[in-house]
Amino acid sequence: MTTCKPTRREFLFRAAAMAAIGALGRPVRGAAPAGPVSAASASAGAAPGAESGASAAGSASAGPPAGRRPNIVFILADDLGYGDIGCYGCRDIRTPAIDGLAAEGVRFSQYYAAGAECTPTRTALLTGRYFHRVGGLECAIGTGNVGRYDDAVRLAAQHDLGLPAEETSIARLIKDAGYRTAVCGKWHLGYEPKFLPSRHGFDRFIGILGGNADYFHHCETDGTKVLYENDRPVERPEYLTDLITDESVAFIRAAAGAPFFLYVAYTAPHSPYQGPKDRSPAPVPKEKAEAGTRAKLIEMIEAMDAGVGKILRALDEKGLAAGTLVFFVSDNGGTGPGTNTPLSGGKGTTREGGIRVPCIARWPGVLPRGRAVETPAITMDLSVSLVAAAGARWPAGRTPDGIDILAYVRDGTAPPARPLFFRNRRGENTWRAVRDGSMKHLSRQSGEKTEQWLYDLAADAAEKNDLAAARPDEVKRLKALLAAWEKEVQPRR
Ligand SMILES: [Ca+2]
Image 1 (cartoon, rainbow, N blue to C red):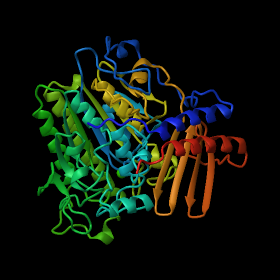
Image 2: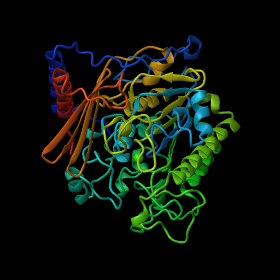
Image 3: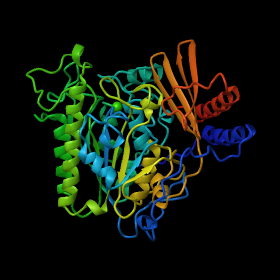
Image 4: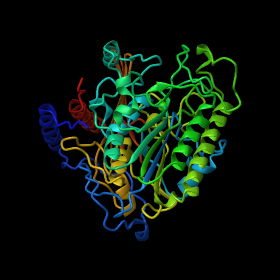
């Protein structure tokens, strides 16, 4: 494990950013929370004698009850929109397993993927930090290991497009705390051997290297086979969603002794749009890879939900459900035939539909049952909560950008106020956003042209009523926050 101390630039900038926020006439406490944490019952919290999770970013910790560290199953869907599972209001897709998970746990209504695309959010999840700090990962790595904006193009040419092993991965931290670790599913943090899961603390990996693959032939649109088992390519006949489920179930069934951290990274419902019965002799051709119908998307999400059900049953059958923290989350908003109702925009944008996504957590005896959580949260909060739950610790000097959000949910208290920041790049386009309290400023820069909008999400989650012209001072204040943040998260490479 590599310990990274903050650079002099980071240290100086943090001091400058704090001063800048103070100069804007606000106390140095970040943003007002946009919504209350639903009151958690006292009986649900407990966790007496919880060990410190060593979260440098939050004072509360939902660390493990003494002597009872949970297993962790973190299920990540791919491009699953806010409006496409039952417990978030969807009416044409049946998701009984995921809905059941929400009924037994908590459902976040204002959870944000850190990125508007796959690679950025996965980087934030594994590092617990804004992905912008790493460099080159502000856009999904393109099929065939292609960079899609200037920094990424440069790094790809150097064979450096991926998550460096020097970054602190939560899998590494959790493994070092005594867990067995596995990732089943989509990696998308670099194709080169030096970027593979084994370099980031995963004992086991089976899944695809890149952002998507044919669900039956497990190849990219140029024909490259990308299904790997650990560090080597492997041939398997299964529908990819079922393969990920079966491997996850097998890992759970084999569990013995040490607690485990299982990262289940479904590729559903990302394109190509293939249901479980769509096996064909040849892979989906490139020109048809992005074409999909709502009916096909429904098949894919329902197959994933069936997989979630099998994973939960495997926990039940092993008698592990009560001692396991389960997350179900999406990595960015829906696209194509997906929906983000009632939000606007979708994948690749910093409109709410691009970044506000489903997030469910179940931890029996620690989290309340069947509660909606309105508090805004972001990917790095989950990283911090996972590390705390495992009783793992962040290395000195490696400060995460999240808070232990589950501790606040457990206790029914509001976390410290803070702004949340977003920036997604692709080609000449850059989407930015900052949310502070209920106010959100977002912009789209395309070459020399920049458009901007201001919304009050408390009254207008659908982002229909642009307040930018009416409230120039608020625009100025939020842009200053964003500018300070952008300076602070400058990439390392
Ligand atoms: Ca995605």
